Length: 340
Image (cartoon, rainbow, N blue to C red; front, side, top):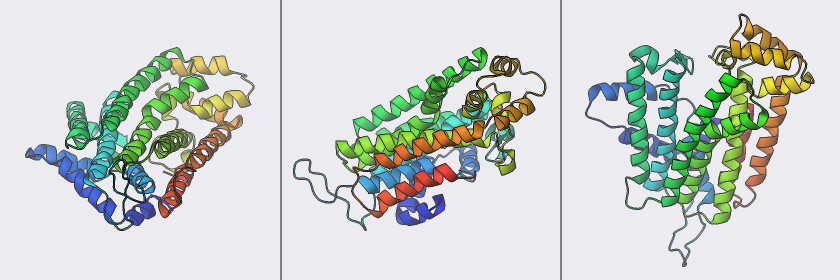
């Protein structure tokens, strides 16, 4: 199944999520409402809330637990408001970081369309990101029955996002990114939020520790795979993703396809190429793209991606068999094979 088919599987849950998202962004400031609609009109695949809702369905207990007082979720029962709010929080936080990133990176395009920064200015993009972040926090703590574990996991994600961005900036100056540093960056900037979304969805239905751990491991691995796939796109201009090719190199980011090419080349030319990337020499896009293709950097990155997907699929073992567990398998496979 692709992302749309998985949303269709959720039926009313997905519609309820969309309604909850719009309520959470409601404001009596008309300009703010206009900007919110601008972002929502090209919201992307919304994989993070999709993950949260699917995980809630997959982890919901099958019956009432006398020890905890938690009621199992009947197959035809709607997900709770708490589950919806946690899914909304993940989507709001994700878009808040994009609005801020577009300013930091001076990006004119996002998902093939003009960014808020390019249309309305950097100050508007930052303020709108702040608003979405504040509404994400409210979605998590704005009810009496919120789960303190969810506060902790989203707080950790906020810290990870900041640390990952700073580490990436540090490595852009030094040019010495290795695979360990690369994985730390993509965990912090991407996989950590996937993890928070999955764990919060599981928490919202009273999942046991075994399922919570499965949710965390599964989501962490698909988050890593997701970002590796994005980094492969950067060296695949023939896929027409809507983003300029080799943009990471222009921003002095050494990602897995380049690191894989260094290995494929037995590190020939690595020192000179790293220096050229840091210095931003003329023609560096074409030079790095040719190097990555000659020394099979994309193939290396794809193999690593598949390793993370296999770990994600294995992590689902403790979850009870259901259509929702199969849907999580389909989501992982979709992430590994998506073209955009």
